[in-house]
Length: 171
Image (tube, rainbow, N blue to C red):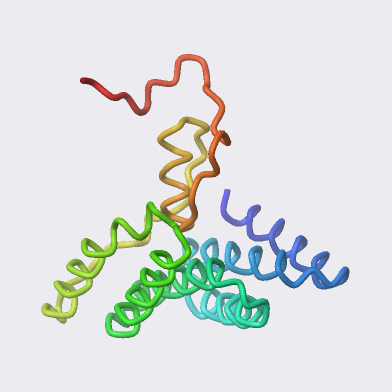
């Protein structure tokens, strides 16, 4: 439920501001930006992401900067601002390579090729209104949410759910 998630994130942001935890505030602002984008509130999403980006830059954490840039690029794509998105994706991917975000870095060439195709066809329309976090607890849903949020799943953070066959490897 995105409206409920939005309300909870706004509450968390207020608490982090009150206690002076800028790093946590930046993280929650980035999450709020993605929720707002999912609700189609692109101007609000951009404002939240600008605030998140500024806090991350103040912290000097390069990995968080890469994640923040990637989220910003995602918003730019939703705004159909392809050249800004491409520039941000390229910079975010360079930071991910530098800081070791293996999953995002490995997709660098695919993302660049996709953005190049979008730039080549200015009339191309991408329906991204359906991008929202999953409400499921399966391994596939956790992976998809990590991709949507542009974060790595922490090692050992995914507990096996009995009967979950959402991802299978056949050899």
